[in-house]
Image (cartoon, rainbow, N blue to C red):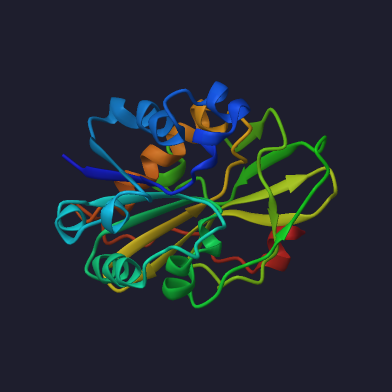
Length: 239
């Protein structure tokens, strides 16, 4: 059984009425409900707990850490960052959702963070599957349509991934990376930004499927040696 810890340090869901209406159990609860049918052993950790809920004991008993983060990381303890990075390098899987790329953790693992391109609220989003053979897209069609503008566009100036899983296309006609993987030491990382806190993103069955698949793929148990991935240069993907 894969042991999953869902770590949520985004606190606005507790303070914003419009967010609480969408996620009465919190976003971490919605994610858990979406993936629990896979039989994972799931626990929660929150930012306001001692050691941000991620003690060494908790991480030692975590196969995959799902990190649902926000952009305010001033209170993010460096010792916890080092602890997570050490576990990733030793094989723990990491699934980064929402704006986790701005965090100290992302910067330490990747070496940088990226800027967001804010789009108009009425623009629609389609996530194209780059490599249909990849386990993360099992059960997903050639693309995912999001009912609302749920994905922020992101420039391709963050570190080049090992694999592109999704690219996104929206009405402005620009292409951005929406889902990709990295390897750090013995660990696998999946980075996916499917939406804003005020959209019902984590009730989307395709998004739930992607997260569940990513947990299984990043978990250190029973990993295949096959290296999936589409390595076509970005300019060719755009064409």
